Image (cartoon, rainbow, N blue to C red; front, side, top):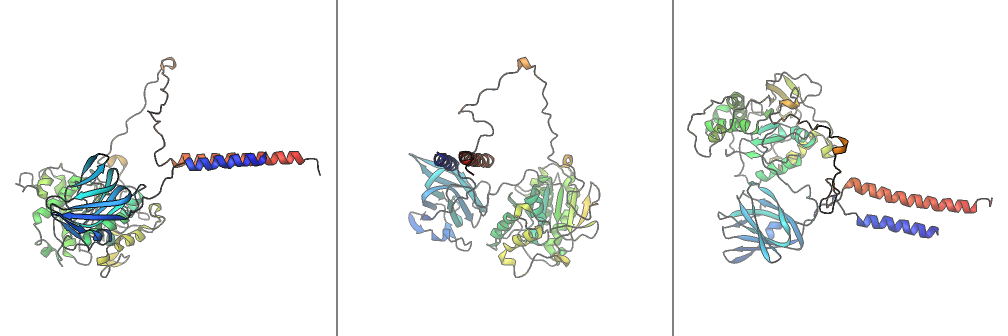
Length: 477
C-alpha cells in the first residue's frame, strides 16, 4: 500500500512540474542563411553574421536581405552603419504576405518584433539605400540582455546629462547613470553636443556603453561634427554659435529636467568643446526660462532655433557642473547596486567606458584630479543648497510635487453602497480572464506555490505511510 501511495505522490509532482510552462529563458540566437538581392543579382550576406561593425553590406534602393532559419524567428536585432530612416520588413504568413514599417524611431541598433513567428523574413532597403553591419534572428523566449531594446526620447525627463563626446558621460559623470537611471529608476535623458559619424565605430560604442550602465531611452545626438579645440574662443568658431545656443535651450525646454549635469567650466583637461558646452548652458538656464528669448527671430526650417521657439519656457531646478568648486559635493559611487548584481556605480562607469574600445589608449575612469568622476558642484539652484554632504543626492530638496510631470493623486474613495443594493460580481469565464491571470510565460509566485503544494503532498503522504508502519509494528519491542 505504501509503495502505491508514494508512486501516486511522485506521479502527481512530476505531472505538475511538466504542466508548468518554463519562464525566464532567453531566446536563442538562431543560425540563419542570408540571400542578398540587388538589381536582380544575388549576393552573399555572410558578413551580416560576423558581429563586426567594420564589415558592412551596402544596399541601393532596390536591395533586400532575406533571412531564413530552420526554426521560427520571433524577433530580429538589426545593427545599421548609418540610421536608414523608415524601411519595410515582409514575411509570408499562411497564404498572404505581411508587411511592417520599421525604422521610424531612427535607432542605429534596432529591435524588431515580428507580427507572427516565421522561418523567413525580408529586409527591404529604403529608396535612398542603406548600410548594414549585422542582422541577428532570435527564436521564442525572453529578449537577451545584450539585445538593445531602445525606447524613444523621454517626453519629460527628471535628469538631463549634456555630454560633449561619446565616452565623456562615463569619464566625467561617473556613476550618475548607473545610480540614477539603472538603480533608482529616475528618467535620465542624455544628449550629446557633437556626433561621431566620421568615426564609424564610435556611435556603436556610444550605444553599447549607455546600455551597459542601465540607460534604456535613446540618446539625443546633435548635428555638430566633432572637432578638437584647446580653448573656448576657438571652440566658438567651430559651429554656428547661435545654433549651439538654441540646441541647449531646446534641450531644457524639450525635456523639462529637474536636474542638469554638465562639464567642468575649464574643460576638464582643457578641451575647448567641453568649455563651450558648459559656457552655453550657464546662459541657457535663463534663456530657456524666458518666453521672449529670440522669439521673433526668423528661424530656418528644421533648425534648433525653430524647435526651441515652438516649446514653452522652462526653468530647471538644479544644475551641477563637474569639478565646480562652490557648493561642492563628492558623490558616493562605491555603493553596491542591486540592479547590477552588487557592482558599484564606479565599477559600472568603468564597464560603460570599456565599451569605448577606440578610446582606451588615451583615457580611463578615475578618482583624482580633473578625472575625478565623483566631484561636482551645485552651480545653480532654486530649491535651496545641498546639506547632505555625507551622502549627497542630486535630487536633494526636490519633492515629488516639484517634478514637472507631477500629477496629484486622484482619490479612489467612492460613496458606500447600501448592502442590499450591492450587486454580485459577475462570474469569471474563460472569455474573461481574471485581471491577475497567469501570463503565457507563467506567474513565478503561482509556480512556486504549486511546487510547494505538491512537495507538501508528497511529504504528508510519506509521513502518513511511516505512521502506519509505526502503528503496525508498535508493541513488538
